[in-house]
Image (tube, rainbow, N blue to C red; front, top):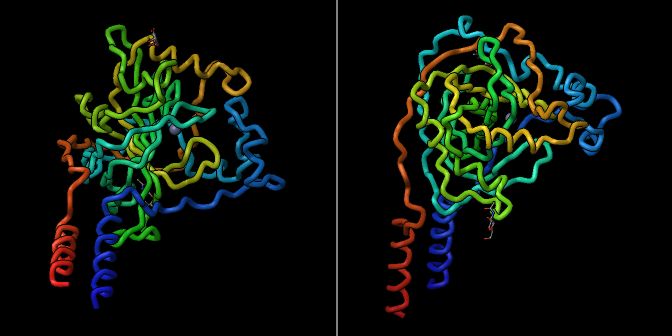
Length: 319
Ligand SMILES: *[C@@H]1O[C@H](CO)[C@@H](O)[C@H](O)[C@H]1NC(C)=O
Ligand SMILES: *[C@@H]1O[C@H](CO)[C@@H](O)[C@H](O)[C@H]1NC(C)=O
Ligand SMILES: [Zn+2]
């Protein structure tokens, strides 16, 4: 009997803990379709690079699909969208840092962090988690023909849980694109420093994903169905590209450019995929609402845990 209570209590505690730990069941991306003679194991070794960006479909057929990214955004051709998503990262966890990922094609920080609710280009409200952000220089998207100096991609992936079914999520990823333009008066962003500071641990602890958005005075965005802009070019991205460019200092821009120093992989120090055909896709336009952050305490004994401990104490006392 006592043993039964213990089993029950430990189940209760475990069930509660699972919701507070970072153990997420991410929706998987569609399988890439490889070209004849190319396999998943060797397409990386086959040497895709920005020098052969026009030929990526020779490795992965998906890269020649009709919903590819990036695109040229013609603002006059966009349609006003009625639903305006909130840029409000919830559950900001002060205890989890972003770790630098060692990527040959970009600079990237990874983590499993804040939740965000976004209206997918297909109209459904989907919950995603921010997983990583990385850079491209110059920008991948163009807005009315203009390239910006740099574009950051915030990559979010949808999750499967009691309230959300991956089968009903059309775009498994939402990527926010933010433009940056070299500006003489710009001060360096702290969050970029560990990438280039030889003394740094490669970790960023204090960065709040809401920060860049809160620096924008205009939250106009363009929204469309697209793809990853690197292999395997998976066509499962809900793209949200913000119009207003943020300032970046010459020093930090040069650091990014200099990182792309291998001229066989990055001709002219670029890591942007060429513009892809729109193929009749619609571009929606809207204004995001930058809401205030609701910080949720990281360590907090739940009601079930407290109750379980109280029952345990009573069980011991009556023994
Ligand atoms: C995105 O794709 C979905 C599903 O194919 C479609 O219903 C939706 O209209 C598309 N959105 C736009 C903006 O074209
Ligand atoms: C790295 O640390 C050394 C010793 O503390 C210091 O002299 C140097 O300026 C630091 N380098 C950078 C890039 O901060
Ligand atoms: Zn990217």
